[in-house]
Length: 103
Image (tube, rainbow, N blue to C red):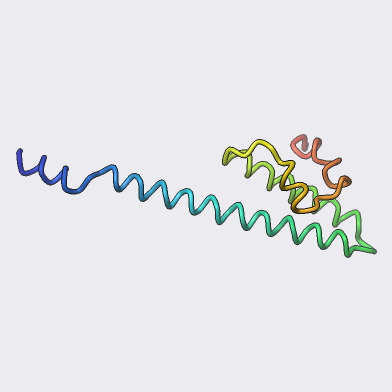
C-alpha cells in the first residue's frame, strides 16, 4: 500500500490534467484562428463580388455567425473589437439576428 501511495505522489495526477487542459486550450485557439480566417476570406469574397453578391453576402453572414458562436462558447461575449479589427461590414452584421432561426 505504501508503495502505491509513493507512486501516486511521484506521478502527480494533476500534472496529467494540466497537460490535457493545455491541449484543449491550444485546440480552441487553433480552431478559433481558423474560424477567423474563414471570416476574413468571406469578407474579401464579398468585397470582390459582382455577379453573385447575394450568395457571397449570405456566406459571409453564415461565416461570421459561426465565428461569433464559437467565440461565445469559449467565453468571449463581446465582439466589438473583432468587428472593427476584421472590418465586418454592417450589411453582414444586419443579417445575423435571424441566423439562428432556421426552419
